[in-house]
Length: 457
Ligand code: BES
Ligand code: ZN
Figure 1: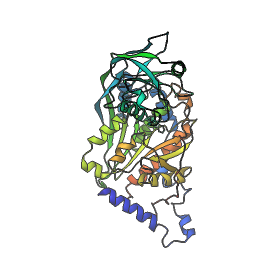
Figure 2: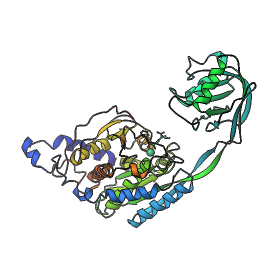
Figure 3: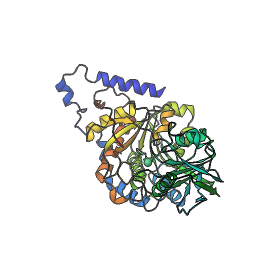
Figure 4: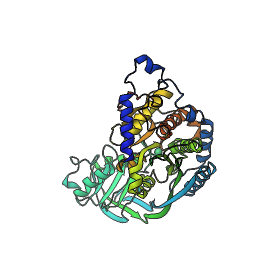
């Protein structure tokens, strides 16, 4: 219900603010796009230096979900929220890490040496059968010939799910997948529920060697996966709440989130220590600022495993909390020197309250922010609950994405400052006690014209 009121007020603001005013009168109002007065109360306090120091601390070690690194990050984040005066809850939830066990490929004839890595969720089994090369394993490439054979597949073009489904449908008994052009290593590959087959990944050279050998005759191979299994672990969300001013409480909730986990082995300075640093900084500056709206600052665990933390958090919300949630701002990869411009992504590629307000704050602070369509982060579970949500991120991505090179020296203080100011100003536009009377031209900033952008990643 609250969401509807706010949306109506915003729309009224958009429509009403110019009414009865000449263009000149409108220009002299505080809603002039270049005037920071509206936002100064919050944005002046934002310190990129502090955020940089937080990233330095968090990126000292990887923070993969379920590891000691994550746990230490969680304790640090909790202590910071508490230092700022927030009531802070650590939500724990179960996750499963994959122990890939041991795996091998042996040929009946001739010697063959390759490092193998079992797919995530591979079946533990040993199968001996002829190899059948099926290219990228599209339905057109996979014929009946693969029945009873081990499918040799090139990575790329289609999802792991589709490729494996296509060969399973034609009766394959094992999978060997080799890496795509330009990529090294064999650390990839995932099976989905119901895909019960031993599957291993190898480097591109090893796969091309097999393709080559196949061109001069049949090869019988054994693919073996042993002792691979799921290890139960625990991951965490950290949730800090700020109650609204008791006399001004409008019942609404805004959340601001980032994920504190990194990929295994990556320091995740930009992905997503940067978002955590921005979330903590916004929590710090909002701690003593009276609002009419409840604010929730949340850092999620296990995002990199498939948004586990944010799904857990969203599922923990009551119907009333969901109904009262007016906006979710997700900060992910907000500080790389080597990425492109800021963009707001929504899972359906539609504008919403968050993108409207974010675009306008951008226009006042630096430049208007465009929007595009993308999931792939913790805004998705909020969107799926019907809460207006957007991902604030820079795109195209930096080359260090998900690599051990995602380190502190790649962080830009200017980018951190700009995104945090835009999100801080947006949050405050909704949460300040003189809104949601957004139709009042004295406090309602001008809406911005902003466009859909097919931004490459
Ligand atoms: N920070 C990324 C999200 C991202 C990646 C946005 C690339 C835009 C482009 C996030 O941490 C991530 O890597 N997410 C996973 C998705 C998840 C469902 C496992 C991804 O995209 O692989
Ligand atoms: Zn991320």
